[in-house]
Amino acid sequence: MSSNTKIDRKVKDLSLAEEGRRKIEWAESRMPVLLELRRRYAETKPLRGARIAGCLHVTKETAVLVRTLVAAGAEVAWSGCNPLSTQDDVAAALADEGTRIYAWHGMSVDEFYWCIDRTLDIEPTLTLDDGADLIFSIHNRRKEKIAGVWGGTEETTTGVQRLRAMAGDGALGYPVIAVNNAETKWDFDNVYGTGQSSLDGILRATSILIAGKNFVVAGFGRCGRGCAMRAKGLGANVIVTEIDPICALKATLEGYRVLPMEEAARIGDIFITATGMKDVLDGKHFDAMKDGAVVCNTGHYDCEIRIADLASRARSVREIRRDNDEYVMKDGRRVYLLAKGRLVNLAAAEGHPSEVMDMSFANQFLAMKLLVEKKGTLENKVYDVPKEQDEEIAALKLATMGIRVDKLTDEQVRYRTDYSSGT
Ligand SMILES: NC(=O)c1ccc[n+]([C@@H]2O[C@H](COP(=O)([O-])OP(=O)(O)OC[C@H]3O[C@@H](n4cnc5c(N)ncnc54)[C@H](O)[C@@H]3O)[C@@H](O)[C@H]2O)c1
Image (cartoon, rainbow, N blue to C red):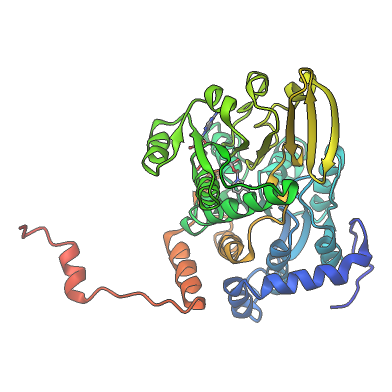
């Protein structure tokens, strides 16, 4: 792909493009569903005429999505959805092949919103979010853009929850598809993706032994379940904290110990928050922690750990390793905060493995296509992904894995709905 210098863009270092291109190629070799969709729609170009503003982690998998949207005819402008998650080589590769991209690792909060604003310069007809910061920017600061937008998609749990609240208040200015809530996303990406990549982030930032450690997982939803499962697999004693009795019961029957955080804080060696809720770990927990405790977050925002409480208790702070800050408490205990409390899997590792993003981004792609097809007919609500889309993606994924499933016979189909006979 040729270098394109006419397109407006801002990335850290364009000379990283070749390295980024190789990373993207590697991801493509693991994302057969998205590549099949790219092949299918490259000629008919169902996204022709659509201008997509995207705000989603700039990783090698996202680059595969961007290439697929462009191949289907869309014009795209992109920013990262977290100041610490952009892979600079991938951003450089995308910029080099002509994408309007505004993203670099380690940006400030002001720069984060500046990047979003630049993507709005394309006058988007569609928005693609992970955490809804783009949609919030349009609704709170750039209201003049709402009229031009046909619809949007949302990638993550926290974003969907807030957009549903907005729609409930009548404040949502255009329809949104909750990509997160597709079964082929929520039950795979959040569980197996977050599980593996969060442990990957913890290992890269600490290099410690997981076996034998008390590993505290706050929140036993999809992400928490994945983290607990993988930590257990590495030999940790997993402790779960919850606020929901059903989730707490599920954790108990999975064999995990369930405790209130105030008790878990005293015995934990490693803590990970996966709740989407603020202040899950705060001052009283830091006061109780053992010397050497490691603390991190894999929920969308960096508010799950009250870093101000940690800072106010520390007599010194230093970066002891990459993505690992040592807080020495006034009484001499040390607490280690990974990735500054931001998504540990994206900031300290590379985010979810490509194989799982294959399904999430196939959902994003098909949801964008659906928004084009349904343009002008949807209400300003949050819609779930249609069941048929979920089934199509699951079937495609299985086919690419060489796995076949059985089919019901006609007799079995009749049996399923037969209410004339019993025992
Ligand atoms: N790291 C990633 O790459 C990644 C991927 C997907 C989702 N996410 C984010 O992770 C978070 C969780 O997503 P999910 O899909 O697992 O959501 P979920 O709704 O399935 O699970 C969240 C769980 O947290 C529990 N919870 C809420 N407040 C709590 C508290 N104070 N203490 C203990 N438990 C509490 C809830 O009861 C629920 O069981 C969201 O912010 C989501 O956006 C991150």
